[in-house]
Image (cartoon, rainbow, N blue to C red; front, side):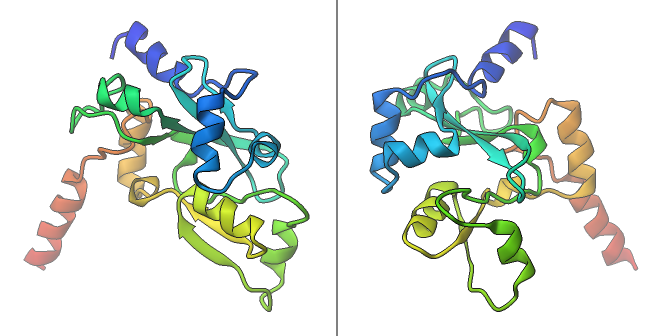
Length: 185
């Protein structure tokens, strides 16, 4: 990947200091108001063609990485194609988010306290917007980053080599070779 193209991808993850109306409206469709979006750190990307949200650790003391949700125009124009499918995915995770959870740090939810108390009910769902909405409704919910947010050890090394930008196309050759070895045994 050329430096210019790599920079283009990174600009889709870099948050600006604002949240454009089109991104506020996208979040409102999922039941997330502007105040909550700003509280969670949603911002429009520097490239202005995605919204970006920081993913924080359970203690809410450190940003682990970012999730970008591309605008429909960027998807239709195929502005950020993945290597394998050659299409722009709807969402893309920054490489640091491998095998992570999304904890909606909103209102009075104390995720560390919840994690220590096995008597409390919590939910898990695919997607950060659903996790936010359910938490807003009073049911603390952890968000998962779809199937491509979870990778094995061999895939993690490969992902680091390509900058982690094609998290939606991790090669499964390692898994296939392991399957063949298991069949031979």
